[in-house]
Image 1 (cartoon, helix red, strand yellow):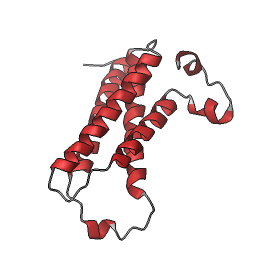
Image 2 (cartoon, rainbow, N blue to C red):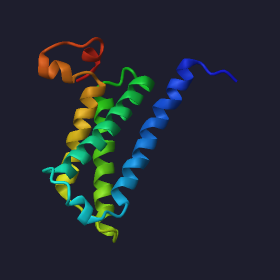
Image 3 (cartoon, rainbow, N blue to C red):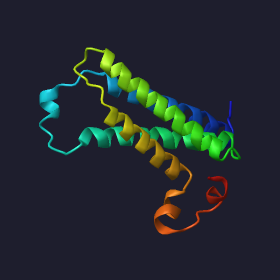
Length: 144
């Protein structure tokens, strides 16, 4: 059965954020050997990882929403941010409940939310206009 490009695109738009959310979940709950982690001397590396996880998640959610609801505008942005903020909060709470050598940290949650904000801006192509003052196509019209 041949599928149209639009059909495959819609399936991928749903599958990609779902798969990424599962990866993020497992990365939050797996056991971490603190001695191995401490060998890397990158300041705030865990915050960078959190920011990156949620940047990608918000980007994928936003792109999917834009495909399914192209005229949603602010509501779409708000939905993606709320989903990511709640998911990040639940994962931090879950870390505090599990005995897997992981610690919950509200700063990790802030990094999650910051990453989600950047991801939404990237998905909406708004980040270029924020930093460079350019209007980027139709995305500028339907964003905020």
